[in-house]
Amino acid sequence: MHNIVCLTFTYPKDAPKAALCGALLPAGWRRVWCVEAKHAGMPVPDGVEKIVADFPRGETLRYKPAILGMAKVYAGFDCDCLIKLDSDTAMWRPDAFVAPIECSDVDFVYIRRHKNEDGYANGNAYAMSKRAVSRVRDYSAFITPTLIDRYFGNEDRVFSAFLIDRNQDLTCCQINKAKCDWRMRAYTATDCIASHYGYISFDETKGRVSDMCRALNRDIPDISGYLEKLKIWAEK
Image (cartoon, rainbow, N blue to C red; front, side):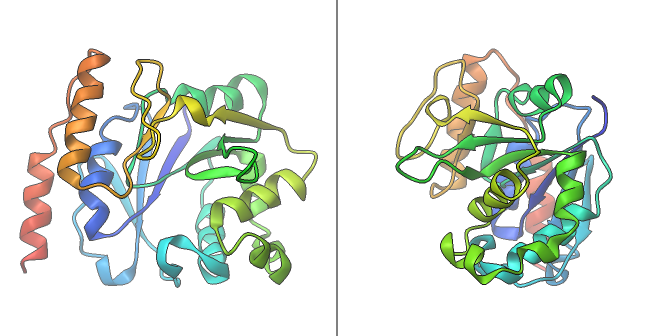
């Protein structure tokens, strides 16, 4: 599969993490950052595209206006696989998200929340097939207060409920949350699928990324040049 888009909604405060985690992605992926108009001038790393989309982001992409805005952004892509990746998430085994779509015609690949949470997707990373994205194009389907309110406005739960429950002909693949690294439950074995570095500093994130790269015998990304560009822009 060659037409893979990895989309990150970000802003200046999270840009260092987005740059660091994004540098770990496969070279063949099309990397796109979506920013608000007020941050349109923010520099992006080499090889990253920038699109501007203004909509109320509701804290951390929550509530109906944010979900409708995200759906509209998703609908703008024509690709075989669209991955939504948070700024603070590193994919160590990106094939876990792409292979089910490429090899098994799956439509929605997600890290499944534990059953006591509700079993839907953790929103830090999920992948959608072309078919799933085509369903999201009818984003008016999200204008249902019951669906939004039931999941407290959380975009990951709402998109999950829409793609899994309201489009039952679509196929899904669940990724084991226990094989992912979280602040509350660390998992740093070499078969780790993804790491979520939310709620920690950039310096700590950089240290944990470096440790994992060493464990996997991978090069540690050097984003110092981008950080300098970001600093110069922020000081203007």
